[in-house]
Image (cartoon, rainbow, N blue to C red; front, side, top):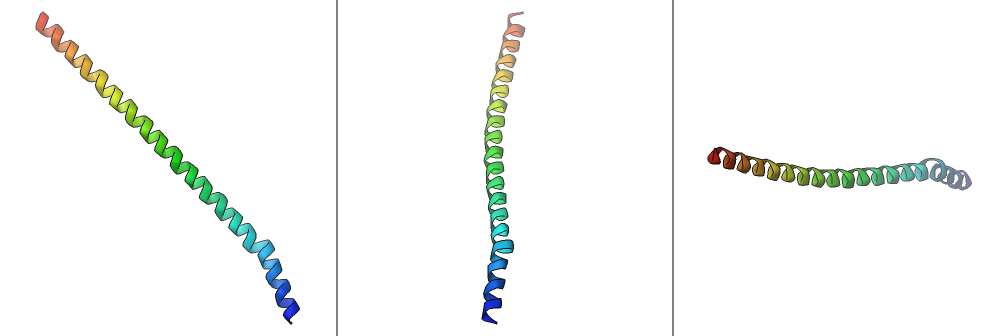
Length: 70
């Protein structure tokens, strides 16, 4: 009886527990990578938005200068 229990624990560990843990670890790493990528994209988008606002502000200033000089 003890031998059957030991065999059952061995097979459950080998075919169920270990693959499940590996799958969960792969999934955790994937989520971690995706979050890091999303954060980088967010920072890049913020920089681009800031630059676009700066260009727009400069264009408005130039337009005001042109209107004033005319």
